[in-house]
Length: 192
Image (cartoon, rainbow, N blue to C red; front, side):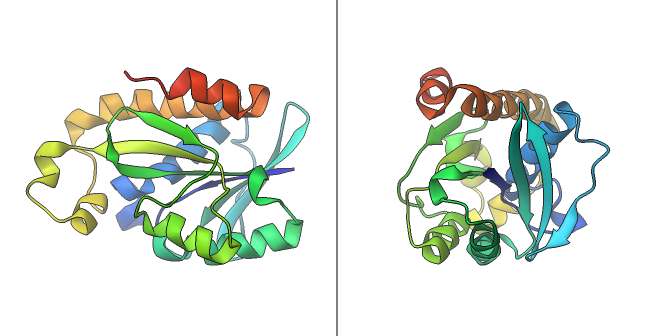
């Protein structure tokens, strides 16, 4: 059993913000992999859906605790299902990666991301696999603080690149599940 968590903030007002790219990637994965007819369950301060992907049970999670308390929800789920942190995959935004880039890591610090800080704190380890989605836009960041930037919507002209980035992220998750992290890191961590 594996757990894939997309990070974001609950509520319609945050639906298309940069900080919610984790939610969007998880939703895109589920749509592509025929989970359209399944319904999210509200449990453990999260929305949760389990599916079978090539005979493996995968639990998908969208924490509803707001980004900065993501670890609070994930701790409950990990404990309930007795999932090892190495069986997690966290999908989230990265303000330091340019829009269009993705990076896969198996462990490491939070890099200042408050959602990952919370997960590391609650799970008491930084050995948690993650898929980071670039949201950086240098021109916009120069004119605002980081908190305002991550809670802003993507610009219309960014949406085309964003769609291909979400598609690429879904393929990366499929490759992680099919072939493992080493393969996926070789395929997706290259410079564009």
